[in-house]
Length: 299
Ligand SMILES: [Zn+2]
Image (cartoon, rainbow, N blue to C red; front, side, top):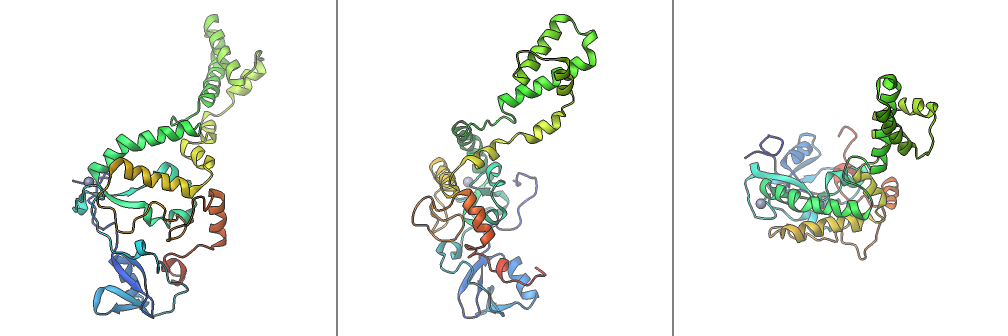
């Protein structure tokens, strides 16, 4: 069995190597590739004779995920639904679908390890087909964000553009009743009872490609509409749990884990999307990976 892109997975989704601060605090876990990066640059040495653990040779600016039980716990690379442990059949499942996640700030996107879980290909597709689509349709309804590429009013405009183009090019050759149909489409597009030849010519000059690029996608409309990113992500996590009833979620996994930090938050509504962006700018909640905070510029 192969990954969905046709390549067999070779690397684990969770890295379980430990990175310790010079005074012996476990800071975060990562892959062996990552610890080799530190070792090859003499930024760390093997810790306690365990080839999977390293201790830094420099003082970091922070302690990474120290204090975050979930982040520091070793995790199995098995399907969270059925426990399948074949690396080749495991896929990296993003709990928040890409169509929404791509509108997160880079800061949040790069720091969402809680929202990536291993799922076997079979269960990944089962969730996508049977449940994720239902959720998207519910969000489409809730936020007036159609899943179709374009909203109905935009579609109407594009139909009008096409009609104008046909008319300008071929009016002499088109039967009168057909001309009237095309003009009606133009009236609908322009939302005018009466249209002039200038209206038709101007509409025919509109580039449909530009129209498409200006039309907001379902994902963007939803993300622009939600008031609270934390609540949205928690909803996505809960949806996966309710839908698939995963029996093998990593220890300390918690629906309420903060999107922007690695600790539990005390109440709902911690951050709005805009606040998240502000926090990104301010860098106030950067408590995560050491290599983002401490590693020399060459990284
Ligand atoms: Zn499975």
